[in-house]
Amino acid sequence: MKIKQFFLGISILSGFAISSFAQNTQSSQAKSINLKQMKLIGQVDERYQSFNVEMCEVIGGDFWIPYNLIDSVRKTSKKTGFAALKWKIEPINLYEKKLRNLASALGPTYVRVSGTWANAIYFQDNDEAPLANPPAGFKNILTRSQWKGVVDFCKAIDGKLVSSFPISEGVRDKDGNWSPKYVKSIMDYTKSIGGEIVAAEMFNEPSHANHGDAPKGYNGETYAKDFSVFEEFSKKEFPNMKILGPGSTGEGGILPSGLDIPIDKILGASPKPTFEVFTYHYYGTVSQRCMGGQKPAMALTNEWLSKTEKGLEFYQNVRDKYMSNTPIWLTETAETACGGNPMAATYIDTFRYLEQLGRLAKKGVQVVMHNTLARSEYALLDHDTHTPRPNYWAALLWNKLMGTQVFEAGTSTDGVDIFVHNLKGKSNGRAVLVVNTNDKNASIEVPSGGKIYLLTAEELLTKKVKLNGKELLLTKDDTIPTIKGETVKKGNVQLPAHSIAFLAFSKI
Image 1 (cartoon, one colour):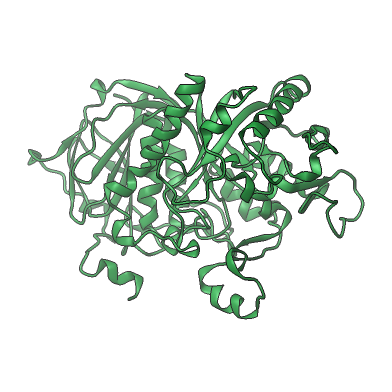
Image 2 (tube, rainbow, N blue to C red):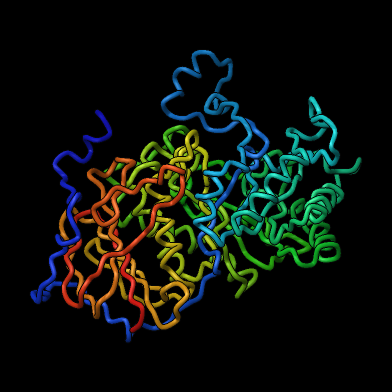
């Protein structure tokens, strides 16, 4: 069965002119938006919407094979098992003008450069030719020029750099003790070229440490011992770097298996680890590559869209148990783990992307870092051409309109979810995000005149998305087109089936 057949018979209203918005006084069944009575319930970081560039992308290494190439690559590869799902990629060119233009449009942002490959990285702290092989105890090599590319990229796009460090055998002394000298070398070099690592997890995903190049037998006690050295060193040498952690993932019944160290074993160990920001990672399930998957027929259900709150609830409860009131960040997330499903690159995942941002802001999460900017199916940009995918356009509109103040918009019902922030840059203005997951129109009663930015598509599994009836495309010189809203009047507004609307009100 072809994937599109899941939606046989489901119609999408799109391709209409803005005059198609039906506004009338018959609004008895409309959802009313009363902006003046909404309670302020939270505040998010100005870089709330952020993204990852995997360390594997920076240095070039094994990453997820695109679905359309899996069969052909497997025929010529001698790899088996999990390794057969990945192939060698070239380092990303962070100086590419197009990539910088598109990333800049999402700024200000955090840029997290981490991932499993960072756990066993050797930083070659000289300007000589790259080593042919990493020293013993390491698996990967990061050169100065590659890291400078990261620093320069962050400067160019108004991005603040977030990272993690190696914990493999190579960074340990003869007694197995973790040494901070490798952290110091990369931190010193970063500073020498005018950069800064503003925040860092000690290493990536301790919950899966033994799958992520940690020494054999690594456990909660080892983590606590390592972290004590890391924390003391960091506070002394780099006091402005926020210490994040632990960055665990998949617990609370979210992912099916693979856990090495439960978070209680990490945070309950002695000396007790404490963080300036509590972090976790979230994927609702694993992708088809890893024998998982998420059927398109489930992608717009509340069960799927609300699962991000279930993931948060588990780690929020753990946070409250061990370090109450610590800010919480989601430092890695996407549609599914293992590179995402094919549908992650299509319009249907835009609903999950925006629902996650809206729901987590209401629940107190300060930062959400999407994985990735430009690699694999779950990326915001196509990994070969860097052409924007539907999630990129959604991210662009969020960045343009949604401010840092979060308001209570009421309980979502009937497949129409509403999220309200202040209008970006205007404390007295409001930005309203309305997500209609239904296969029929939704009726909204707006309190005053404003602007509407309506996202639609001709089918759910397309990579083409329209803004107010016109397909969103880059200009001929690969820059962002002018993004304009259309006037909407006070009263009843009919939103098409499977549409996403941003409403901007300059004042209330």
